[in-house]
Length: 458
Image 1 (cartoon, rainbow, N blue to C red):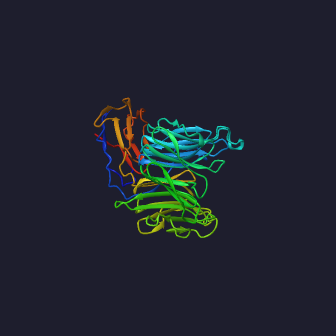
Image 2: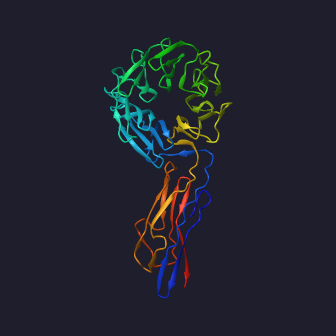
């Protein structure tokens, strides 16, 4: 048996040769021995079945074993997908020919939304008369998805950002021909328009976040707005920076608001992070950021922000003007200082970030891989060895068929293999006693094994 954690013990079988006959005594099968959980580490994750050339668009999870990822193949007529991780394996749960994918988001395991843009005629032909933003919703863990009936004003416009709480989901709709930017809301039954702005003075939302049913925020080119549980209110032009990509916030145990917005402060001049000042009700000024990386025009920008709490905040960004070969950046705030995360090495540009806690953080990469910050799966898979049974006796040359199965624990890293010297269901060689069949199960990080044989002549 082999194990990445030091090698669990092996069981022993005995073959007794008695003159011209032989009896095979199958000894006790060793059980995998779990070890203590390690500290969380960054791990690279790939999605089996992700089509070549697919671009990851969004990620959301309710738990480490309930993860949704949206992706699409960016051809002239795009092909959209949603994949789901159940703690054991990845599966494709939605396929949308003629759709490019946006973000995926949920308020719980049975309330998940996927933003798309319909383009069945292909971009070269203008996508078709029925082009425009679409939303698909699943209420059964991704098993089925229903297209949503959206307000007519959504029309041919795209969908930008999504956030919310149960029965209170908000989506930003891109500007129409008249310059109107909107927010639509789902109340659990219907979608309706809850905000419209058409200028810097009236607000054109770029990103939004909902902290609760009665508190939410959006950011615009020059200001911000707030949701009070009934309506959105834009607070007017309050700062002198424009290129905002994302916003995230949380209230601490004492009720204080910790809210960050990220992007760049004009001409893609690098990663910039601003923190909202609750006393002044403002993010400050163009140069009032709390963190920056990159100095000059066309260096790059921040693209997303997410945190599990006030002392655990992440920002993703790209700096192609600084390091073209490895432009991806991931930064972390620990409550005291911001720092680049270097444990992940060089990465391509991140495409999104989400998580559920300090030990469950996911980052999408532009090359189709993901990064996952989590505790290692140190519990070995189990092997259910039915045949040959523990202590079974067989005559030399008897026809015996292998019967075994392997399983990883719920929420584990997934079963990577279940391989024996003899395939499950195949005949075991009982005619040559020196043979030593074994069965090995492995997850992505652990392994377990069955017994070996020792041959003795009696």
